[in-house]
Each structure stands twice: as C-alpha cells, then as structure tokens.
Amino acid sequence: MWDEIFQPNIFKVGKTYTYTNNDGVFILATMVRIECPECGEEFIGNKREAGLFLKGHTIYHQHIEELAEFYGGV
Ligand SMILES: [Zn+2]
Image (cartoon, rainbow, N blue to C red; front, side, top):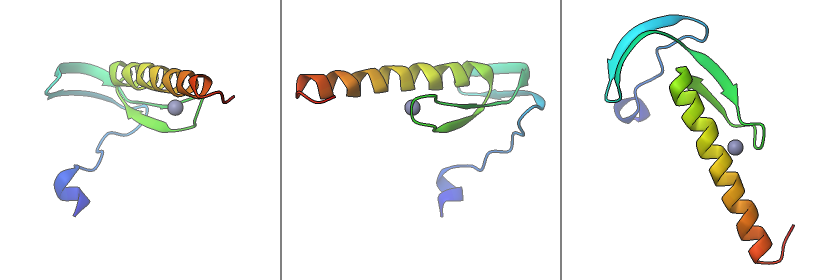
C-alpha cells in the first residue's frame, strides 16, 4: 500500500546519479546519508535535500525549545 503512495528509494548512498524531479535536473548528484545531531532522524538524498533536511530540523528543534521555554520548561 505505501509503495503506491511513496515510491521506494532507488538511490544508493555514495553513488552518483543524473536524474530529474520536480525540483529540477540533477547532474552527477552524489547520494548522501545524514543524521540530525539533535534527534537522530536520518535522511538519504542529494546534498541539496540533505541541507534542507538539516535546516528544517534546526528550525523545528529551535521552535520546540522556544515553546518549552515559553511554558516554563527546560
Ligand atoms: Zn532532528
């Protein structure tokens, strides 16, 4: 069922691919695997997407911390 909604990741970490998706054309993009230092969630994709993943997590964790401070926690 999930395969109908989310295509399985065909990219292998460390390999280089030329492909296109809704974001544009990627030429010789190396697939990387990274981990959020805050929560340990992992991501596999090109470096651009990996950067967005880290940026998104940074903003998310910062937001949660600010919420916690607002409500008197941490
Ligand atoms: Zn995280």
